Amino acid sequence: MLAAPLLIAALSFAPAAADAAEAGPPAWPAFLGQGATAPDPAAIPVEWTPESPKWTADLPGHGQSSPVVWDDRAFVTAVSGREKEALHVLGIDLKTGNTLWHRTTNSSDPVENTLYVSRAAPTPCVDRNAVYPFFESGDLYALDHDGEYLWHVPLWKKVGRFQNEFGLGSSPCQTADTLFVLKDDPSGPSVLIAIRKADGGILWTADRGENRKSWASPAIVPVNGEPHVVVSSGGGVQGYDPATGEELWSLGEVGGNTAATPLPYADGSFLIAASPGRGGEDADAARISNGAVKVTKTDDGYSAEKLWTDEDLTVSWASPIVHDGRAYWVNRQGVLFCLNAETGEQLYASRTPAGGCWATPLAAGDRIYLFGKDGITATVAAGDEYELLATSRVWEEGATEANPDLAPEDDPQRAGAAAMFSGITQYGVAADPAGLLIRTGSKLYRLSAE
Image (cartoon, rainbow, N blue to C red; front, side, top):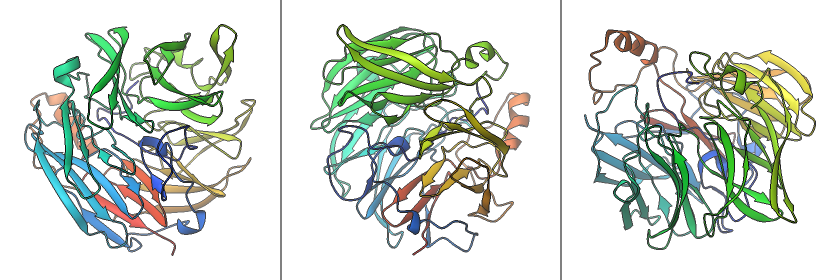
């Protein structure tokens, strides 16, 4: 399943989920742009060079989370220290790139800082009242938009440590009043947790059984006009009632779906994606697990079924998206697949210069942006035929970012593999009201066509 021994959090535009965040100013309030204002295509350049950014902000330590946006501010997270003991949250002015505030607190569960385990991977949520950073240590916070702490909950003390082979990759999702955090544990009990935004109180925990392997995030999917919390994770897809935690429906005959997050594109309809795994252990299951799912309300409750699947499709970390009736998948070799989202008919498959993508693609107007892991962004025309519009890079080729907090690798095989990840990685993006944010481990870039 794993395309690389690093855990990432990526972000892309998805239609505004029901009740995802209160109505307000332009926003990109959560992972995958859930609840986002549609990006302005005129504000995002078709192509760029290292000289193009309006500003570049240096970030502390290292982070793999995506930025989130509310009105004129971006919010980002990072960790630092040999045991990831320092947790950082920053508020940044979108116009200037200046850091408006920077808060640092201590991890309640420090662990060794290595290249092979997540480093500030979960993307925060934000609404009109607060920003809600969540860290792989299990620490969940609420801060107001000026950086004042409102509350802190060490979730691991209530539901057990957040453990996974390569760390935690799951980001929270939200409704107007509630945050939802997924804790899938490959060696113990797994739960979905609902947390009250007002004070950090736990509203409910939904038992998800034992020994579940996943780095995917929950998502809010509207079904018959009502929000469901949907989890696509390690062998199944489930939908939960956000008010009670009751499992409303479940879809089986799925496998390899441990990284990509379900993306809604119509009422009750969303994409799921899977990978065959590093050693091909999930190859057979993944062939029937990339496609679209439809949930409908019935007299007996709810029913979930696959609308279509395509055995040619696979993913690494980037989730598939839907734009203008077309579904887009990027595999680990950088091949872009375009399909009719309603029927699953494959329109084209073409290799792109972006290569493998860890950040999920962004759709804006008549363009699709593919953010290659190693820094090359391919801009592709949205349509039934493949057309490459531009190839861009936001930093100079060959540039590196220092990682002084990383513990040395004692294992010779891992030490050798680490060289493959010595460059800079495009981890995630966010569309702001008048441009585009790109996040690497220690920098945030802002691009704008204005």
